[in-house]
Image (cartoon, rainbow, N blue to C red; front, side, top):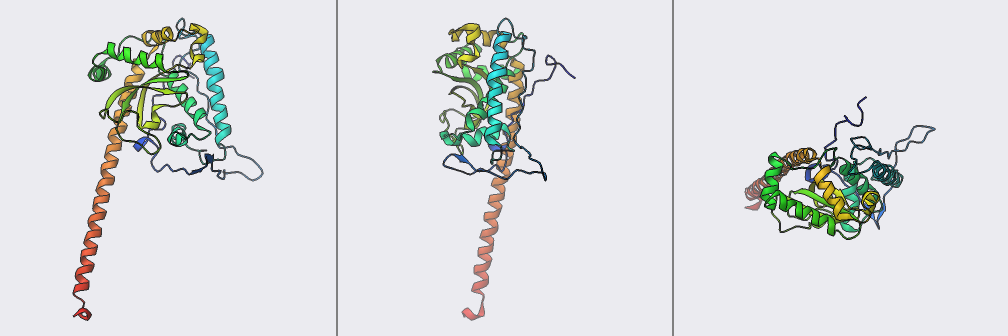
Length: 308
């Protein structure tokens, strides 16, 4: 069995299907209560469907020292992240959310800002797994390749990007997150208002979000995040959030992970655009067929001898 130090980093977007969610995903809610559903059971036994597992970080607990201590990681992952996963499993069992992917639960339960009870635990479970995989031992430095090119294109320079990202993380009031994301569109989506409607499509953006909110709800593709909840850094930095942010960017970021996420995001966007084009052609074909059917009916009705 591979050790934690050698286990490959999972870089998929669990919720990013076509259109930002699993195709065909539907959910109905009334007064913010999740609708129960029947769970498959065996005779004489009880089967609990909801079972998200707590994934460990992709490195040993002391691998990020001296920049992030073993004590911080064990406390942050072992207590906070664990609690989010365990509470989520309790909240969704037997409901319509049971059986969905974690990302789909985040998107559906956001509910246009009128969040369903499962949102905070689902989003925090997703955010923390993404956060662990945003770091690596001996990280930091500067990205390369297409990622660096896009950063320089969209922010002017890597240094300007760093300044904007650090500022977003430092100025997020209270608890929350700062993100580098790939913005796919400027439109509002089914259950959220786009925070950057005037920005161009298909570009990198820096955004910050309060509490558990993440860019998935805006149909953005997250590439990098930093947790600025106080429990993420207090044991190592006390109240010196700017110092924690600088260490994160200079010593911990895995730019390889960010680059691979960008590749995945662009591939998913191409897939989505192909699907949207296919649906558009189908709708146009249906309209053409309907018009032809009406025309044939009118012509045949005009030829009816009883009308003479």
